[in-house]
Image (cartoon, rainbow, N blue to C red):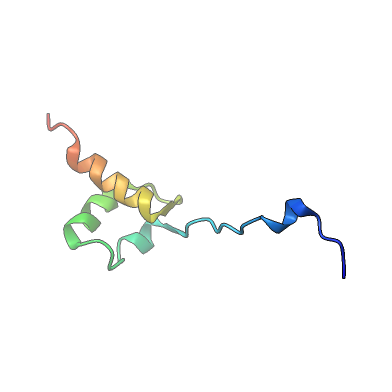
Length: 67
């Protein structure tokens, strides 16, 4: 029986949330077409976003003050 370090016994493996580029969110079934339109202007090309980040971008856009 091998001696285990007690610090290693309680470690949990936590996976980072999946992130996807703008183009993937624009065709995602997780957003209705109107939200996909918002994402097309709210997200930057070349950057990846998690679902929570994409949803937050939609909410921020929809709550923005209209000038």
